Image (cartoon, rainbow, N blue to C red; front, side, top):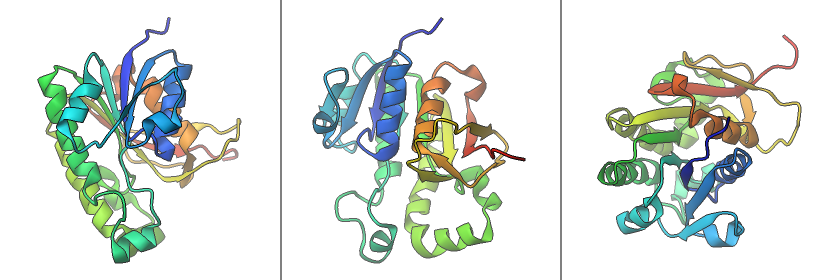
Length: 225
């Protein structure tokens, strides 16, 4: 029997955030979506809060009455532009600072369950990258990965019931036959995964106690071994 939870998604308007909201609704949860444009993205079935994840008053308003917080913060701009000119809309420290503030407010309001999407290749999986990905991270994503490392540290030291999801390269595939591969020891099947599958994983992990205090590598299964 599925148990409905009140769930806040921070960074809900991004690609992963939207798929997570969809998956949560499909699981029967009551969803609050926080982003700068949440009310323009979601319908009446979702409670929306328009505002910044870097504003504690906004976070408090969004978290009132919630049982679970999911964070899918990130920078959706072109990585070449971000690396050489900086982001135009989103602060470079959005992942770490947004997560740090969210953890503070969660503690104030006694909310224990936290799920965060980070990036495969940061934290415990950083030594498992392929050479091509190491070069990509170093040349283009270095400032963003540095911020993700700070985010990772805040989560692990939070004392909350956390789960870190680390997807590999994300895509928007809608293939119904796509199957998820998860691992708590940094193992990867394919080096890509759809945002839909990642959203499904986050939604199902809310009540999955096996993921507590775990960092889960998330990829897509190979159809043929």
